[in-house]
Image (tube, rainbow, N blue to C red; front, side):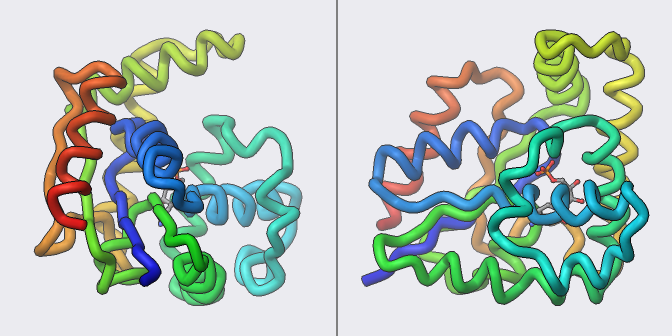
Length: 201
Ligand code: C5P
């Protein structure tokens, strides 16, 4: 049987780290679906049309450097509000979910839209201040000089766009299990996720 695990949540809640660890622990393939929107955004920032790029996206686009910048993240949440962009990216994600070993997909709409039949759905969240603090530290370690306040403003702007768009807004699926990582370190958050998943598999 092919098992699919859907992990959604806002920026910097820890879902990327958790997804990677869960996939490794269970021997499943892992897709960070935010990379698809970031790849579309990166090419849009060079002047290409977002819808045309999404329709023509290939796995190689996900390997491009500099998809993790703050500028690309903001543009990603803008192109992600365009229904034609989202539609063009559905098949890639669903094909990945059919991976023969089973798969973990993380994003914003995996449990609600992309894989509504996923065996386990997690919604990983944390307070905006905690998420901004983590993102700030990550970016500072990479040499960014953006202040904590700037990063918090960016996190809030992205939350606002992701939660309020008409098409596939960020929200927990009705059957998702919530994990709040505000007061959890990485290991505790990963352990909590694995516990929930193993109970439901
Ligand atoms: O997860 P990450 O921060 O890389 O995602 C970048 C942006 O891509 C998000 O802010 C969101 O707007 C969009 N996204 C989405 N649906 C997904 C994954 C990401 O709309 N499944």
